[in-house]
Length: 265
Image (tube, rainbow, N blue to C red; front, top):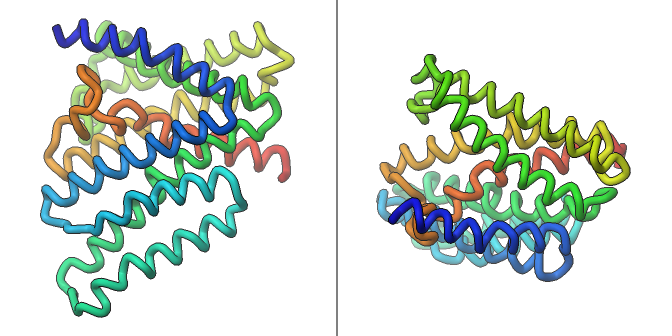
């Protein structure tokens, strides 16, 4: 039954996501704002269950961060995050709530960056040359990496436990996922050379195949810290938003920043 739920959700969600990734514009920004809010709520709830009582306003502030990063310059985005941290700290400063104040402030800053800025950078990929092809390609390569890392690990994985955050993952699976990601990225360049340049394909492979897997490990660390199996049960058979987008949250900003650096702008 659990597998059936996963399959049904995937059949419905994947085409819709790929369409929005390709189409872009306001619907894509609205999607990323929604994902930003839901993922921020998951971290907000995990913090509260752990006793770190961060304020609820961090969620709308995180959505604003997504909007600012996605639509404006880095300077305005940093200004918003700085102003938000000052606002969030007001209650602790003026009510003299000293105990746990740094934990609350640190968790709030992390949520704004990890959930808010990440989806904002993902939206900005559309502003790159052929960005409407690059964003879906990144998502597909993340899924390919995840699938082939799993199958390679299941068939060849002998060295497990290296990643303490996720002991079931093997070195063979990690390498296999990355190698298959490179192969499919190069195939995408071969099939669509005018839309996915070679240098973009290599950057896609690095971002999805390497940094995407790192994103999965990073979320595993977060879940272990909060002693939870899934970030939430929002998506039947799949867990929460962070469980489904953990790789994307790291891979998308890395890809955008690398390409902007290479383009010299």
